[in-house]
Length: 190
Image 1 (cartoon, rainbow, N blue to C red):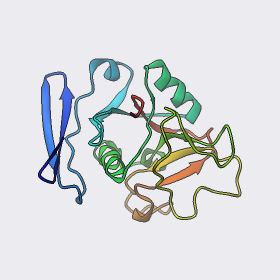
Image 2: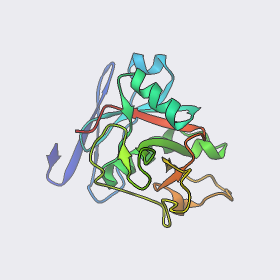
Image 3: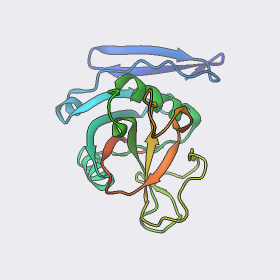
């Protein structure tokens, strides 16, 4: 819902609704919601509603390979997260920022549902939605490595990290699908 230049995002929780607003040009300030009981039962760390279409995103801090994360989401009746705008990127970053443990490199990365596993160089979302938005880190995807077929999202950088800095934040990178990372599940886009 758009009201005089402000986005109004409603977040469903078991006990009611919580509203948060943000200017379209600023970093959104999202209320991280209580996950529903089914998500909590299988280990969701936190949940939120995307500002663009209201999809509920479940963020899992258990680390899995990309394929194991995909199967996990499928078993929940969901897909791995597809991202379609800068606003969604900022929202996902905000979710990670408020959830993440400051320890460990992999706690700052999470699988999203993008892969070129079927055809090298043809990136497809797990939910089969249109690939209308990309947010690669400069120089990515790695054109010289056919073994990096799955995509992860860089969350908040860890203070003092030698692996990455704030320049990586909110960007995507292709990686080996057998790496283990946190991940996101959500209903299909659209």
